[in-house]
Image 1: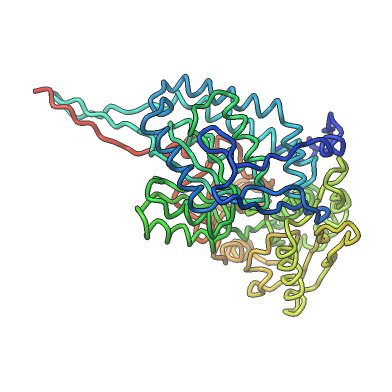
Image 2: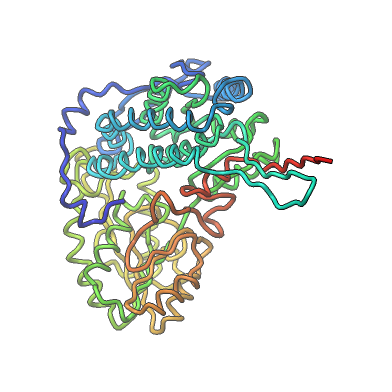
Length: 506
């Protein structure tokens, strides 16, 4: 993701509202390279979180549709050219796919904004560029990951090879629909697998559209299939399907547990989980640039309206700099303009759906009941729009045992606590069942290294809020998930099987 200062200089080169009025929502599932209705003919409404209005009726997939999609993916894997194709040829087709997405980036960014309620500025300057970059990166890696020859001695040739695992299911979240799709598609397809994607029911359109573009790019029929629908039907059917070899899931810890059960109850398919988070930002007393601390704290918790699993929702401040840091945050918050997601000036958009908004507001009320001090925000806003918006909210005087300090709110709600000694701050940061991300701010190199090693998280950023980039693995500890990592070379490994070939020359 570009630095906040870099993004402030960016401008959009199209009229989002005009393009939104002309976009034709894709609503049919993609199976075997063809656009089809659901087997039952059922549909469901996808809504605009900024207005509450219906955008379209989308084909509702269920068991029979998952069966059709898995059969297409299985046939493409067992009998088609994709897995047997020279890696360089897969690379070239995936690059063509990425370039088609780039050519349709404005259209796709508008779809993301309409369905997810996120600012068009984010969809256009972060989500689409990151989607294209991810697919390009993994495409280029397709023919650059080598197998091994082992030193097994005279008279033997022993090799260790990686082979595609087979049919990969991917169950996607609603907060970053295309980026999370790319995180799965890039490494899985580059490794030679075929796929069935189940997008979140709230955000199906952009995923369907890129499956159409995959066919246009020349990916063989059945390599990339998309079945929209609900978790309890289409998602469960994918998790339980005996012909699916691996499922990658990004979403809540609660649903992640279900996929482990689905695997145990079916064919013991590999399960890759990236689940929730309650990430800390630890600011030591020697942190030098408090304006930077404030900007990163706001970026972390208000980006995508806090609907981000790695957001630093716990700000842990050394007491010596707590008051000054909070004052700087008050100033930095002015940049986080809440408004119409299609307005390029908006930096914070809508909450995905009414039930999630009510959950956020309930957590805010509980924090007040438990004794936290509300510094700002706390209310639903823009009610006249018909959409679902919550003000940026900050709580101070948060004790470590309060619910707002322990449970994932998944909204624009920051809890602030203080500590006296560095070891106390690290202990507070690690006092969680999650472990996806953490940040530490300090001007001391020794302190930075020690804190980074002591913090129990899959990614630790120092003097910034960052998830890393495409080259760095992303995943968590504890309730944040396990079984694999998105991004980096590690992502390719999880979609392959390791085989030893032992050849006796005697």
